[in-house]
Length: 296
Image (cartoon, rainbow, N blue to C red):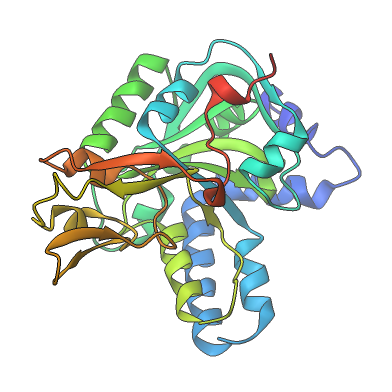
């Protein structure tokens, strides 16, 4: 058994061997795993639209937090261990299993193909945009992720991936997976058309159930419009990956749909008039800003 596999096993110990096997299969067959999850998710929402199992099943598999580009850069340039107090972490990612955020040996980064894009017959490119950050995940994925062409990289290359994704209007997300030790383990750079997590979020919204669980949480920010600068050009409406922006046909100004806004910042980067900005919103949770969250 490889050293990285032994370290990965220590996340669970002998008390939870099935979680270890789940995680091992998840990484070694990641493309097949995500394809199966996507198909099952679509099947459940189509055939059992009002059954609570549908919601609990999907929301319990994957948890993500949208982050701004500047916060994404902090993750891939960390040179120290970060351990966030559980009381703070649960406000950042308020799931029952999310009791702490740990980045151990964060200078260790592995990049791999995006399994969500591989699941699509036609997908966006490039596909090698998923970053596994910290140990033991980075080494375990590098040693066992041959199917998704996993390889170790330096933070400089990770920064280039983040910047290129930002320039394509993709959304940066930090993911927590039950089979990966219930910890923050990966940063994905997601597009609306390929991301299975974003697809699942839209499917849950179609169920029209009050307060459904959310597999993807907002960044802690919300977009706001300066009406004096806004010309109603509609670029923000066209580029928002969460359909959170629209043009008020009466006022001929952009309007943010606060309940849909995830605070990703795509509209801000595309606004030629500089009329859109991000502001912290307590209703959107606490931003995953490592400068603010790490213990003093």
